[in-house]
Every structure is written in structure tokens, then in C-alpha cells.
Image (cartoon, rainbow, N blue to C red):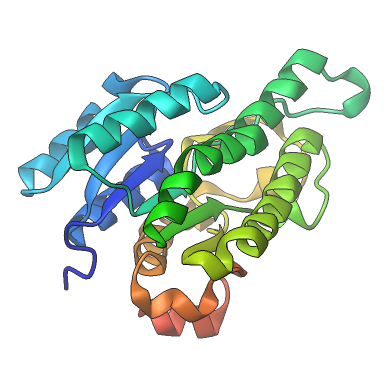
Length: 254
């Protein structure tokens, strides 16, 4: 059922993993998409799949740690479609993995610039439009790492903890003005990020066999569902794919 017909949605980090799967699920629900990645060319496979299925999308180069680049991507989307209805703040990195005592300060700061500041940049760029139209959805991809420290992941955990608070702050400021904000933790999914995690050999997550990792299909379906009116009562919350009640509402196996 095309519950998102003609909705215009931006997905950051759309070239692969959860972002790519979410973009395809959103297109299948009728949405028009801006596929954002550091390189627009990296989104070519996802873009082709969406277009071959009759969807409407375009790719935009955007480094989310650069606010000018984010503004440009948002303006390109507005120029093309005339409005924006949702933003999926999905772009993220795991590196650097390693002990704080031997970490590279520049690499640590880069992680925060992408994982936390990038979420702020996306939110800051779309929020004035959402407030003007008195509607809009922001989904910030969260993690269990936001609430529990993991050895070797000081930057990633700190960034995701900040995203949790960014979700709450945005909901506090904009939730009563028509803007729905969600945090969403997709679980441990088989993505390129997990390749780096397994290679590090640090902490329990790196020891999970690849065959035990989840597919991106369920988180993608959940993200698309959160963009629909059916999820309105959950706005302002941080949600997890592991919640059985949520899975039932979305139609996922429990």
C-alpha cells in the first residue's frame, strides 16, 4: 500500500546498508527521494533500482559534517520537488575503534562531526521548512550504544548519546508545532560498518558471527512505517527494532 505517495523524503547515507534499504522501502511506499551520500555516484545502484521500479528519486553529493553542503542538498530537493516531508538522519561512521588513551584526536572529532553534528546539520536545514508548513518527520538513527558504553567505541557511543538528546530536544521544541521526531535503533545489522567492527576484534559486538547479524529489510520497513500517520502517537520517543509491540504494529515477525 502506497501510504507515502508524493511525500518527499531525504535519506542521508543512502548509498548502502540501512540507508539504501530504507530508500528502496520508502520508494516502494510511493515517496519521492533525495538519496544523499558523500558521493552522488555511490548512490547510482540504489537510484537505478528505484527508477527501474517506477520510482522518482535523485542523488546528491553531501558531506553531512559540512552545513553548507547540507543546505545545498536541501535546496536541491526543494528546487526539484517543491517541498520536503521527511528527513532520515542515517549517515554515520564507526571509526575510530580503539582505546581512548591511544586514539587520534582528529579522527575522534571527525566521528562526532558526522554522527552528531551531521544530525544537527540535517535537522537545522529542514526544520524551518517543517515549521512553516506545520508538518514534517525527522527520524534519527540511534543505537544501543547511545545508552551503554562499549569498549573501543568512545566516539561512536558519545555521538549516539548526543543524538538521543538531539532527538529529545528537537521534539521538545517542535513537537507541538506539527513536527514528528523519532529516534530509531535498528539493531545489529549486516552492513559495511559491521565489517570494520569484526575486523577490530574489540568488544562483544565484534564477536558476533556474520550469519547471526540481522538483514536491513526489517529496519527499512520500520523507517518507512514511522514516516506514515500510523506512527503519529509514537512521536518524540526513541524506539528499538527489538520492541515486540512495535514489531507487531509494523507487521514484522516477532
